[in-house]
Every structure is written in structure tokens, then in C-alpha cells.
Amino acid sequence: MIKILIVDNELLAGVRIERLLKNMQSIIFIGQATSEVDAVAMVATKTPDIVLMKKVMPNIDGMSFSSMCSRATNSPIVIVCPILDQTDSLRQRDNLVDALMSGCKAVYARRRAASSGERSHLYSYSYQGIDAIPIEHVRLLKADQKYVKVYTAEANFTISETLKNLEREFSDVFIRIHRNALVCINALQGIKRIDGCACALIRGIEVQPQISRRLEPKIRKLIAQL
Picture 1: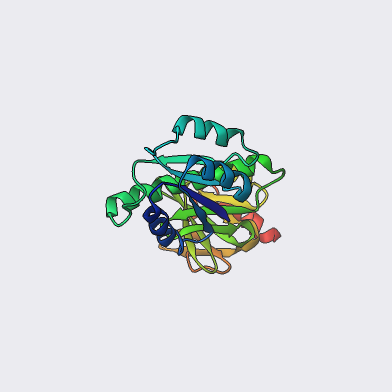
Picture 2: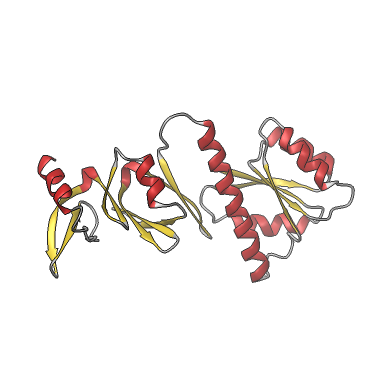
């Protein structure tokens, strides 16, 4: 869960932001500060992960406040936005959500860096919020232009990572079957010929990704051992 604090002297901003965030998964609106005194107190007591702050506010020095946040115990990420009380505008809302998702990625990256051992989840960021995908539920990772599609038995997700990094990090969980696909080793069930090409049969999903000719002998040998 990621906690969001709003810093804006216009009360309508908090109402609109709360309305925007209430249906977003794994994100919670924890309140609004309308002055620097309130903002400092709420950073200390409510320990937000992200502070959304209006760019120009009376009696608040944005640089000083951001510096204070960086020294706070929880050190929230501060996102400065030109306007927070006009999210009825599609462009303003899109810009705000994009900035918020970038902040959420930074929060999870920080948590990951602070933890030890292999991470247990992948994260998908969208206008619906944040989906935490357990690694153990992932059946297939397939490159899709600049992103990677994550296939589980329940749903599909899109993440902004690379197959190369995922293969390196989870070498004991996934095996490469093609330059654009990694498959969960324990989910491999067999190989099927489709239009002359070898394709992987994967437990729990209908997608049957192609296996490259170079890697086919290795995959066949692995399946025989499972």
C-alpha cells in the first residue's frame, strides 16, 4: 500500500484527488495539509510515501519543504504539480496520474533496495492503480515492444521491465524459450507443433508461445526431466 498526502491550500484539491484515488488499487489518500505547519506535522505523524504538492502556495517554500521531507524519518517522495484542484480536466488528470505512477515506481524501487533477498512480486502500474503480481503466479513473460506482458492463470498485466533483467534476476524460476519469451520452469507441460513451429504448452494459460529452433533441444531435455 502506498500512502498519499496532499499539500494544497485549496480544499477542493483534496476532494478531487481523493475522488481520483479512491478506486485505484494499493493507493490510499491519507489527508490534506493546507499550510506548511500542517504539512510538516502530517509528514511526521502520518508517514506518507508520496507528497503531492501544489507548485505555488502562500507561505510555503517548496525547496525548503522538499529538503525537510528528504530528512524526515520516512523520507517521502515529493511530487510538485502546477495545479491539483482541476483534475476534471482530462489533460490535467492524465498528467497527474502519470506523475503519481512515476512516484509509486520510485517508492517500490526504494523498498526493494532496502530489502534483502529476491523480490516476491512484480508490479504493474496503470490508471486503475498498482497490481502486485506474486512471482509464483507468473506463467509466462513475453516482450511487447517497450514493455513485458505478464501472464498468470487469472489475468494478464503489463510491466515496464526488460526480459534480460528478469531472466538474470529469476534464473531459477524462468527459462528462456525465445528471444521474446521466458516461461516458468515448473509450468512447462510439453511442446506442440503449430504450423511447423515448436510451441510451449504452459499450465494454466492458453497462450502457446513459440520456441526458437536453437533452444528447442534444451527445452525438450528440460521437459523430460520434470
